[in-house]
Every structure is written in structure tokens, then in C-alpha cells.
Image (tube, rainbow, N blue to C red):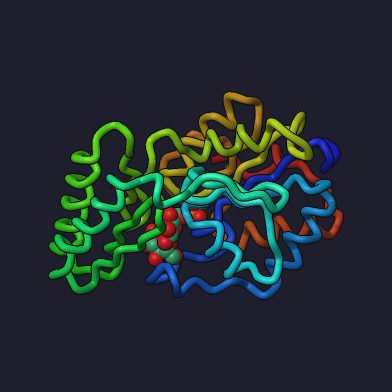
Length: 251
Ligand SMILES: O=P(O)(O)OC[C@H]1O[C@H](O[C@H]2O[C@H](CO)[C@@H](O)[C@H](O)[C@H]2O)[C@H](O)[C@@H](O)[C@@H]1O
């Protein structure tokens, strides 16, 4: 067991802090979550950040009125201590054309949703019939392939996203670690999805602790079952409980 001040805490949003919902805008934030995160951030000397596929502005809306450090769009944009960098749509004209193509090619699939995030885009098929979901996946794979090496396809939970290739959550966590209050601390990262596996690998390689939420194959050594379990853990830590991430259930 170590002092809480030895750690920097990185938290995925969907499927980790909040339960998965039928649509991106239907997520419900537990009323206790924001006060818990604020108290925990104080205990950590500020070393707490959200690392998510969502835009920073959307995380701000969900977690209002608090403002946290956030790596958004899978690391494409980053806000640290109130300063935002990255994630400008105008830097991605080829992607913008790809978004138009996605709208055109998925228009006939009623339950397929395009989540346009400016410097990235997600095609959601959670609500679609199987055949339509397969068609949507084929379309997003084709558009990603045609965009070439500057972009990558990120498959997640009933979603395919196209993201600038250089950005990953692993890079984002390392970038946080370059400056105070994160520098010199051991990273703890909690996430639930395939996108989080990239970051688990780099956190593990850097001597940090990774925790997979929910089922599925993982390189994380530890696992919690549900976002409710995550919130209970964070509440215990926020209230001054012992911080012993290595005592968490093994994956
Ligand atoms: O990195 P995360 O914070 O886990 O975000 C990953 C993506 O999550 C969202 O989509 C997922 O959650 C939705 C709401 O529960 C769900 O309807 C969808 O099926 C999931 O794929 C979000 O909409 C994306 O922008 C994030 O990249």
C-alpha cells in the first residue's frame, strides 16, 4: 500500500464512470459522482484526469459545474489546468470529407447514428438491426481505409470511430505525466473498452496499474465488474480510505 500522493488517477468515462446507455446523449451521471471526483482530486493534489473518446466540451456538460483535466477524442485534444490544445476540426479537412461520406452512405440505415466530434467521428450501431449494424461497420471501415495512414479505425462497443492516427489514450496519459501534478507519480488507469487496452499496455510498461471494467480479454492485471463498483471504490478513496490498488480483484 502507498500514500495517495504517490498516484495519478486516469479515468475513462463511458462504461467506467457511467453505465453504457442506448445512445451517446442518454448517459446518466450518478448525482454523487462529481462531488466524489472533486474530493478525490483534492486528495490527489490535483492528479486526476478523465481520458475519453468524448470531446472535452461534452465531458464538461456531463460533469458540470466541475471542470476536470481531460484528454478527449482518445487523446487528440487535451485540457490541463484549464489550457486546451488539439482537436481543431479545421486541421482535418480529409476527415471532414469522410464525415460527409459517412452521412451519405449510412443515411438509409435509420438506427445508425453518426456522432460528429469535429476532429474525430463515431458511427454507432447499438440500436440498429444486425444487418444494418454490419453494413455500418463495413462503411466506417471503408472510409477509414480510404483516409490512409493519417487516421486509424478504433472499434469499440457497438461503434466504429475514425481518429487521427498519432493520438491514443496511452500517449495522452504519458503526456499528462510530463508535468506537475502528474509527474513522478504512478499512473492508475481504469477503462472498459478496446480503446483502453492500448493505454493499459503503456501504463503497464511504465510501471503503473491498469484496471479493466467489465468482461472481455484484457492486458490489465486487475478488474472491476461494473461502473457502480468503480464509483464505490472512488467514493471510498475520496473519503480517506486506504489506497491499495494492488488489492483489487485480479483480471
Ligand atoms: O473513452 P470512453 O469514455 O469510454 O468513450 C468511448 C465512446 O463512448 C461513447 O460511446 C459508447 O457509449 C454510449 C453511451 O453509453 C453508447 O451508446 C455507445 O454504444 C458506446 O460505444 C461515445 O458516444 C463515444 O464518442 C466515445 O468515443
